[in-house]
Image 1 (cartoon, rainbow, N blue to C red):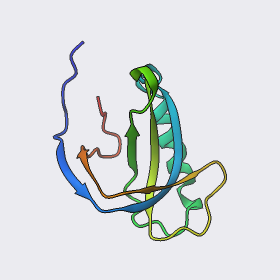
Image 2: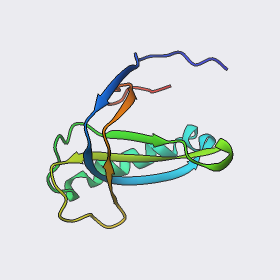
Image 3: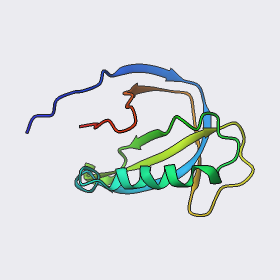
Length: 113
């Protein structure tokens, strides 16, 4: 199976930040079947529950490949926040250290595969 790259990827160093949103854990197969898109949709629907959002038009998708055997990963669908006073029910707060990322931007409605 070949996948056509539709967006360019750049390496960027991002300063430390805090974010609030939804956490998903699963297999690559489940992600490919659309489970992450479902989480992103829920995040958009619940965005108004989060206070101090830095930019409500930018939804971050942060993925960490940290499962034994490499069969799955953790994905966070979050927004950056200026400060954290309260975390809405069933959401998580994450503190992300300064890191260098592979960045690929997508626009609303655009397929990522």
